[in-house]
Image (cartoon, rainbow, N blue to C red; front, side, top):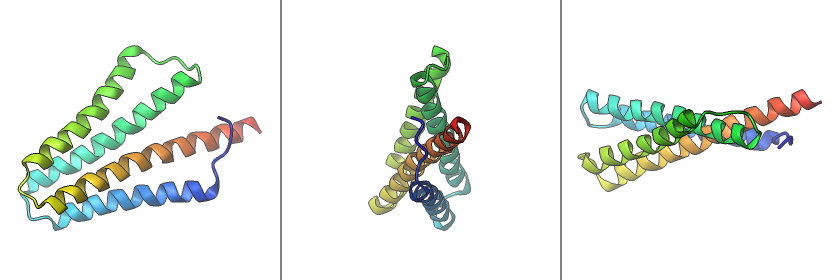
Length: 132
């Protein structure tokens, strides 16, 4: 776990994160939906990003022997699953075409995956620098 990620992987992770977030937000900006519905999806994006990063950190902490309380670990899992379920329910009930629903789902998942990769890269880079 002490290996520093390559610059190419770090750049690709950041590019994927920015692509996912920008695509999701631009899609919301151009969507023909009420402002409160746009706010719902934007809030789910922020909540999902925070939950996924927190989950990745707690899992990594446990693997490295850093103490994590069971309640926080459980809340991280609950929050990540809740964000996914809230997006799913929102899209299921939305008055959008299937291609729009797919676009939001895919840009959301890309953002979550990339946020996890960026957080992992940041931690691996910091750990690698500290060990040298």
